[in-house]
Image (tube, rainbow, N blue to C red; front, side, top):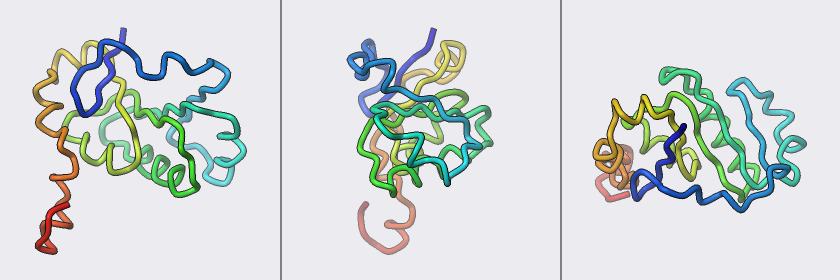
Length: 131
């Protein structure tokens, strides 16, 4: 089983359950950026894999997808840790999917402490204004 997480905490219902399976795609973090436009045609849910918490390629891929104008649902899945949640959201992801074991090690409170992800924008704080 897996656990879905968004700004409100652990979800009991998948907000993308209505999306047709044909309109979903899973992308590995090493997806060729030149192929993104073709891969995303007709896709309403894109899941980007995070094979390890130290593998940041998914952040870059999500940002590129949003910069190309993708308006659908972006989900990070795999080994994402609560400390990365602010960056996940700023990169353009809508939510995170982790396995039950990781959720047990990083309970909902840890994720919720980072749910105000806009407040954790260090660049804005350095410039002297709120995010």
